[in-house]
Image 1 (cartoon, helix red, strand yellow):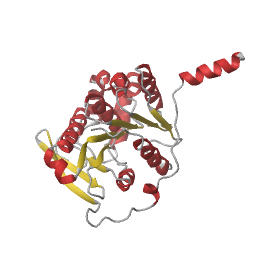
Image 2 (tube, rainbow, N blue to C red):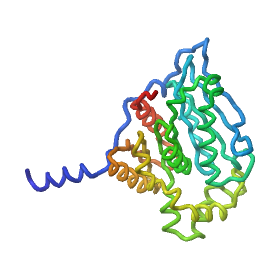
Image 3 (cartoon, rainbow, N blue to C red):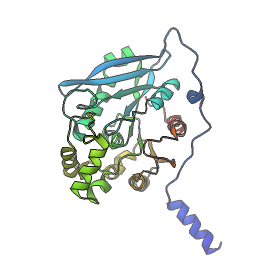
Image 4 (cartoon, rainbow, N blue to C red):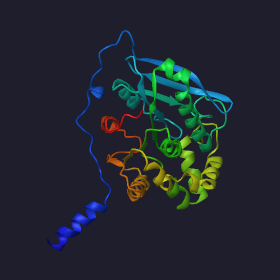
Length: 297
């Protein structure tokens, strides 16, 4: 074999595997038949977490169940909540739980990244309670956490440390290592200010960019999801990236998962951070991955 061919094979073997979504699912393009005995519905409720109750919405799938359920976590501040993805997942037979972290979008309390992690864990705990399982027809053995942007960092942490999570999906998970380690505190504050819109007069979160910057700086090692590779490798992992500058961290995580003897499913979509012109492709990639997950009992 020629040297060039050998080198090509070695490079391919060492490179992250990028997968493409399957043909478009009918869950994206068509409404399912109505189940009049067990119709799809929405449950808006106050989710208990650390002494307060935050705004939450459970999109319940049609059918008697029990249904697998996705905890879908939004980013900072959550202008893009990926509710189109949530509706698609419901049409495919999945319940979807969304929430507004403490101190965001009307939920009580102060906003902080530590609170986001705590609120996500509280949501998983709620999904597993016997009363919730029975009333909402939830399969507690098939709970998947998917997060976008900062929500991806939260999903990675919870997915790594909660052994009851079936699988974890990260959508453009924020590369906080690059933001904190390779920039100054003033630059980080300015970036966070743009995210939450404080200087523009927005009131999406009850926090200052200065406080959020200091929290990230103080917890950079604890929340760097690349360091969670050995734990995340224990269960199926989806990494979706875009052309937003966060790709390197997801690639590094995939390499860490591979070093731990597993493999992440990777999809790259050439678009912006919120997948403005790739929404269908995003939904197809998530659905395709969910279809590969094992049934766990």
